[in-house]
Image 1 (cartoon, rainbow, N blue to C red):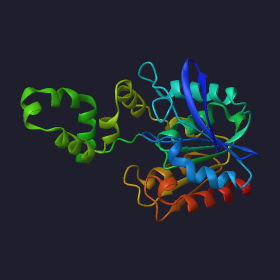
Image 2 (tube, rainbow, N blue to C red):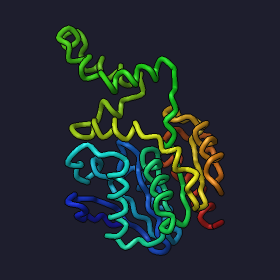
Image 3 (tube, rainbow, N blue to C red):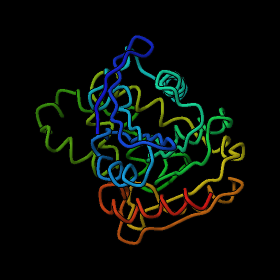
Length: 260
């Protein structure tokens, strides 16, 4: 496995590449990087595929975006990345945030994608009216203001602040630094559901049964919209099957690729 750094649109982008054969591009999730996919990348590359895993801007060893980015900024970066590394047609895998990017990319550039694999993909932005969701919405909009009030600055210590964000399910937002905080808000606001019906490539939707971040119902909802799609549930996996069950995930991916 080799690690390479290239310049794209003025940003230094790091990626890992392994194997030879038909190309697979893997887009990691929010807070992740190419490091989290090393085990899956190794297995896939040992089965005669060339597997490329970039660190998306703001993650891993890649530079941060110069300003808050939205979905389309990442889509443009991915498109230019594929041109830079000479990927004409390839298999595309996307996890969580990367799954949302992969879905929209496939809808916009169908000529480039052989098959699409969405893993616990952050695509559907449903209005969930639980107390947790209401708290998450409040924190994303007003969290910084709320915790900067003098009373709370003195009474609520950083650890308590972190716990509140974790309960709300917005620890990704809490942990983000600089422009990535605003980037998280921008990408969280875009519902990508409208692009699903435009996906033409054969699509596999994989979900961890124990996913507490995104419900498996989202996967079944996506299957109803994406033509020529199928779902696979991994019983022992949570939101990150590539970490929890890399061997099983790799086997599912390989079986799907070989069947198409």
